[in-house]
Image (cartoon, rainbow, N blue to C red; front, side, top):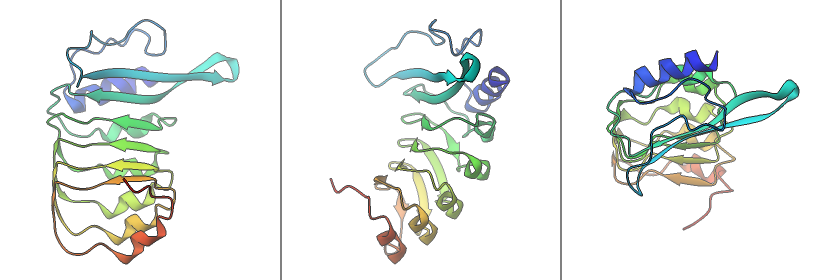
Length: 177
């Protein structure tokens, strides 16, 4: 099932060089890195009963991907980390992602646009969220204040307006840099 989900995710991202033969084996499933800014890695957790493996992390940084953020990510129920930074991805963040258990989400340096979705406040497991250097506009949704486990939050270099919502004070674990 994970392979079918990865195929769907690859199609939505416009990623064409993925090897789907066995994503959780120790055999590289991606082509060789090109630069220091390039990361093409998939990690699985194989500590489940019966030696069952589940995809836990996907890092596709600097891939020149020009698709959209994949709603199909929700088909990977054990995904905790996603980094799609430094690509050309457009659109917005899929509502479907609210049913994930993402802890680490980096979408920085893309072409994402529209308002920052208020439903991101429903991904209660989020500890790190990086949305900087996109085309997001409007105000920061007060619903982000529900993310009480948030330690890292990057929103700079967008077209955001207005003041910071008071609800962000609920993020008591935020680290100051």
